[in-house]
Image 1: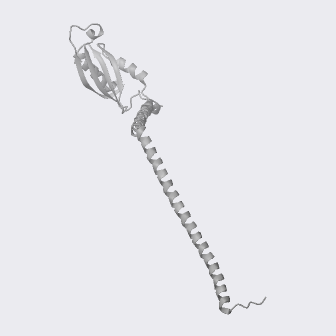
Image 2 (image 1 turned 120 degrees about the horizontal axis):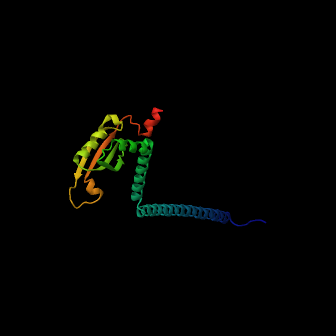
Image 3 (image 1 turned 30 degrees about the vertical axis):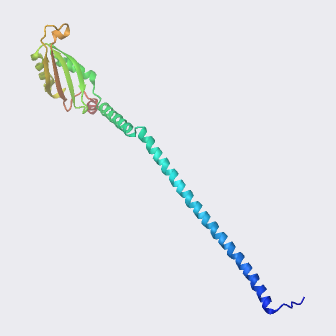
Length: 201
């Protein structure tokens, strides 16, 4: 088929066809860029929402811990740990109270009775409390405990002596009106600590 159209008209058709193709490519490019922009925007929004979610969760966890009194719980745990440490220290010393009571009974004056015996936290001394008939019996107990021949204590100091001479007292309190408190330090190589007893073996 012979195209008898003028050359100018044929050129116009050709350029119109090219313009249509270019327009399609421009539209496709604009649509692609719009899609990329939309994806980027959606990603940023998702990241912001995720960040807010984690921040809210962290805040809720912190509030929950504060409501559960975390500091108070930590203080209780520390107190329990201290008590356990003290128990381990006491057990490591292992005072042989059976032998200690026997020796204390031997040095106790006839006019005095032992009423209390407390080991200190350092496990190097004991607090001895006794009821006595008078002031002289109280001081005699201190002298007996401090005697190095007894091999119990290296020194014994009177903390207090209290005498109640009221006539209204009856029973044991009437016979032993004085209360003496003595702090006594264990002798270095006394035989009443299991640790020393093992070392001697």
